[in-house]
Length: 224
Ligand SMILES: [Fe+2]
Image (cartoon, rainbow, N blue to C red; front, side, top):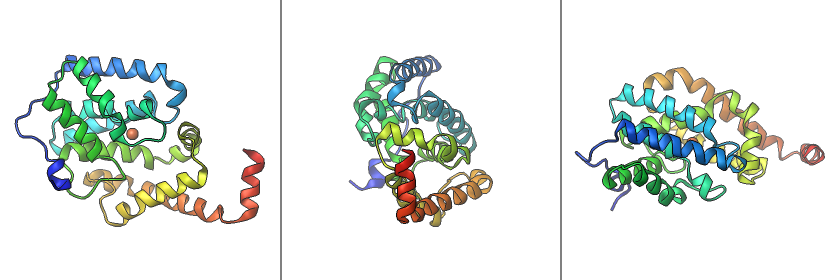
């Protein structure tokens, strides 16, 4: 099965009720509060932002808004399951939450596929509209000018990675996507936020370069 077929949106598979979305919201919110110490970057503040923006992008591209909204709420539960993990690590917990909310199994599987389809490390130009809406919201969070200033250190702590590892990850995963022209799928988002994305990537490229200077390394050792 090709990557495209694996992530094909099922036709007529259904949607998610408002009651189910409310349940998923309350459940994930409680989990974020309970595990706040291991969700310093991917906590409820991140989930709330991605959810709000994903709904806007879903409305704009005509995709299934309740499904996108639900996918956004459960997209990062893998960080509860395992530190520094991929979306796939959260599959069982994601499906468990959706089952408790009464989401039909085919819809729950679809939501899990959307989450994995939208992941920065794996996404491509032809992902589904639902995944595009989720991806644009999650990518916008990464590209916000405030993220490296007030949140990057939280990512290091949450995931137990060094500044060099984070810089390598950001540039490695995002530069080609940016250069190939599908950093954002929504044309308005691309027009509005591409300058932020380019500046952010340039910052992380400069951070990588600076870390090759032994004097900078000693500086960071001294303050860490
Ligand atoms: Fe996320």
